[in-house]
Length: 253
View: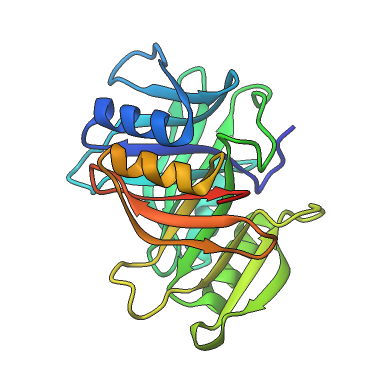
């Protein structure tokens, strides 16, 4: 059962749904199926019969991007709280008939995150590090201290280990209040990264080198890594064929 403050859904908003489907099903090993919803096409990405993410068409001239949804008790109250904490409402609370209610928020430095409350009980989910799930959530913040104040107050996250990254500063791991393991990390965005503050989501793959070959074969590129991370896993960041930033993590090379 999912808890408030937990990431429960991910969405790839892209300019070419068919191409994105072909790329991510190959790289991550997801299965794809039409959601059968009225209106614009929406594709569900799943692993072992468990839905993990969705594909939709980007709107309003926005660049392709991955978005994460955090479970909250009350979407409207959380959106109001975000504004009181210095954030902004990017998309006002609205209903998805038969599914739930959501809103899109921006933190005080502009990083976008979505909040969600479903109708009825949450569906089954994979284990955090199961292949095909999103195993890690990472914020490149405008300012770590300010971001931590915002997200900890909004979602009730608590600090886990803090890692000294030398000149890059502190990488702060975080977890759910009462959670046993960290679910993500955040740090002040390095000055040489030519992007506004952003969230990235690491999809769990079988082995890093094989996944990188699938990225290249599918028309994507790796822009950073692979890099070994604490605990022995390997991580890499890339750009998909439509220009969206994505990340993968694997237990081995």
